[in-house]
Image (cartoon, rainbow, N blue to C red; front, side, top):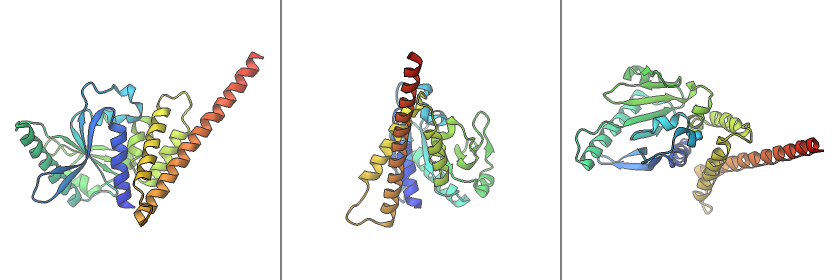
Length: 252
């Protein structure tokens, strides 16, 4: 299940960020051993404004410059963060070589942690960030590693996409929030489209000949998304009928 959650987070970020960033998954990094950046983002020219991609919320601001996302299925330890820091510095060296510019800024690294990594925050001397929602911590300029503690995020519209990257209970709460959106909410169709794309992804990655434990889990998650999407459609139809009846009575 842990690997499934990692794959899910990467592809959800890819789908959500596609309108505003050029997104690459598993970006290789030249180093003595094989390393890959989970999600690497480069802002598109003339990227849409925040109000044009409402589902991104605070993620629009997070991805407004070249950066990487590292979703974690469990709260990272100090050693985990050291490994991520080495990956970030290797990425920076590679980007400098590719561009021929040694002065390129170090890209931000967003570490998404389901819970509070007490030892990691203490080891990095990370501090809460002003101007960002609760749950955002920064390590300082040397690493420019930003840790987002998903369990500490406020339950607001701007954090909805981030919380959808969290554990199952957190995902279920977000799905309930989306299901409760009024029909005239501009973000509702965006969410429905993202959910539809994620259903397609899980369907494409099934091996019908030899379903492993992970693939069975993926199938179950895919079915949950299908059921959720169908419930949204049914709710919309019901609201439409109710609205039509009300208008008919008023005209009568």
